[in-house]
Length: 205
Image (cartoon, rainbow, N blue to C red; front, side):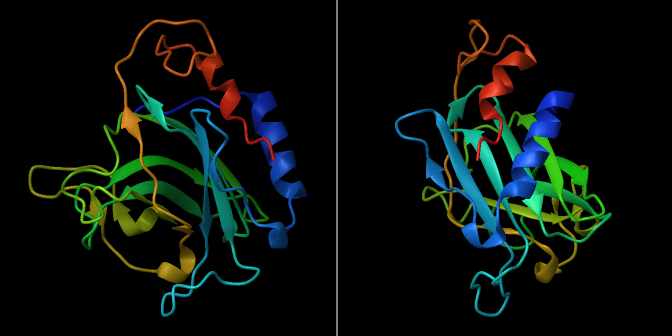
């Protein structure tokens, strides 16, 4: 897994934007016009009814629909303070064997966090996922509740279930891995190793 590097200016701007959005306004969701960029909203949900918890924790991921790497920026709000979370691709069925850990971060004193990453996931969802070909589930879970390091005996998977502490996707997403090619900074299919091409993923809301 390749982790993206968040620049100080981006961190400050993104955090400021996050704190300025009222909870009731909810997060943006869906593809941005005909571009290669989309938003995915994640919410705290009632584990019995799976309805969104009013005034509960929430987050939003901005990502590229097609790219050599799954590049994204995620922000979360209203989570447990000083807690480490991991953003994952979760394939059904339980316990999500073969899940992909996209990135991890710890919340601040107010329960906010930012995760930026670029993971070599391959196409999402995987063909072995029960949700294939409809789409992939993206969750934010407690880092202590999963295994991100596979071994010969144990694949990556969930190891505990505390759904009231998680954020779940508003909808399924699809991602297509494309062949890398050299290109100028800002090119959506550029894979030249320059983090400058991630600037368009700044959470602009």
